[in-house]
Length: 495
Image: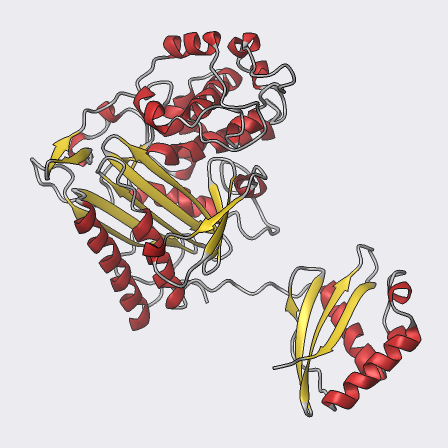
């Protein structure tokens, strides 16, 4: 079952709540303990975190203070800069403009940023940088976190001069993934040029406002000052205030300021894109476009999960999508995530799209991203059974294929099923008959009444308890309009 939605801390409700049960409260108490312990150990002055499930902000909590002078407590309405988690808004804006026919992801970026046309590439055979390569950090630029974080204030005319001058390359475009803030600032310029309005205005009008994110923006000096979480660094065993940075061209890579209440709307919208289904579209982009953010650049890497997260040793596969990292985790399954690190701030978001759950957290400490706590919280939810994926439905075609598989078993004749033309080429009818007879002799009578477990709308697996053994099997439809079977497997299960 999915994470239950009735909690005392419910702030954002998109569906009716029901009464919470004790196990859910105990699980959230463990989540609270994880984040509280992390904040204390990491010397973070202010922290807020939230859990989104089934379209609702089901749990949110602020810890510490917004600033060390007024000592105002952090709440769900406190405003934090989220640094590189801003890139997700930029990526979605590019995809939205693509949907509207205003740009092509595989076109040269210089088509939309004329200043790039005179660039000197690292080799004579280098391809021109595409919009897609900017999205996926494969344009050949050097990783630039130390430098990029300090470019937030760069004005438009200075960035234009940077673009005209060109940049040195770490490698030719398209050879590897290397994280580039400069690349996302360039995407911001593309949004400006293609939409004919400033990047920040486009993001607010086309994405944030339709989602009801009324407290979210880029200009921290225009924010309600009594709601701002001030950024600090931990130095000489005390908090030192980081200078505020005004918004500039590099806001497209890291300039968003938001609250937990607002950000939950963003997380809820993204999660609502799963699963693929019929029905009206309700967001600022189509559901299929939102799902596209997880499309990796095919430069996947693997590494052991941080042992400090807990759980058994786990090797994660990672690829960069479009404004998001996409992980395959041995406990959590697919995790769509990003962090943010910035002078005075750190942040993290985890989306578990197949489970309908998201976790996010913002802190007011320089590069104080709560990633460790967020992953620990996700594992705590998993352990409590709160992250179970909903079962796939059995399509009518798969049900028909399964009925045919059972008919083959009962008759002992492969010809009793509608077969694709490969089946008797792969194993002829006499051998099918011999194989089936041998299995029946081994396991005895099988009622074959158990439900099939879908892998997709076209394939499923099954397990039958028989007279003195078990049968494990698989059936798969061929890609033909009429139901025909291209793969059918039966085997006696072994201990």
